[in-house]
Length: 255
Image 1 (cartoon, rainbow, N blue to C red):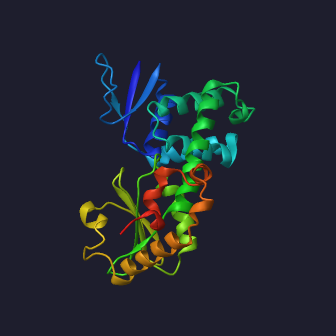
Image 2 (cartoon, rainbow, N blue to C red):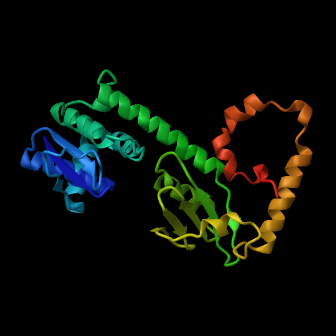
Image 3 (tube, rainbow, N blue to C red):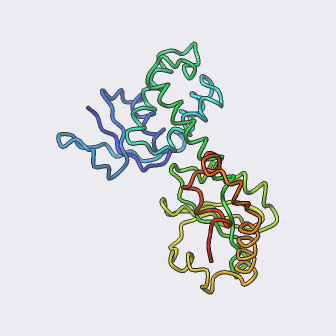
């Protein structure tokens, strides 16, 4: 077995794929740096991310699998499923062995089927984040939203919010993965921040604008008064808005 250790980025993963074919490694296994699943009898080969190599792999895959096929691989990668690297490599290796067909349609192949299922789950989470994220106005004029998605979808949703909120500065921060995306009225960039979560969760803190706190109170009161209890259908409501997304919704917060 040949173990290749990469930096957790998609470009790093593709660099590892490139080197597997370049050096013809036998029984390759791709792991993230620091992964505890290392084989005690093997020393991992540390992969240095090389965009030139990863771009060559992307171009090759795009030629064969088209944009939709590459998108499927990216979405599955962002699922962060344990062992997803080996699963994706199986699909890529299968594609290389069947150059005259788009293997992403061959659901009789177990790896292809699993990747397709992961892609659907990630896509569902992406759409829910786009629907349920709520921004809060900070005193410095930036609209802030914190998220904690099951999958690493932040880079997938940033263009949606850039197009929807072009006239205001905003920051979306992933609590679990400890990074965010910031829009400055011109560009969206990935940022790393050291947030004081207690301060962010405390609505009486000095970080929120007075108008934001007042708005949230008014919105919650409006929602409470217009919600007809006799017509309440909890089962249907949970189907459309699963409970794990309530933490994002202003109308679900009690002051």
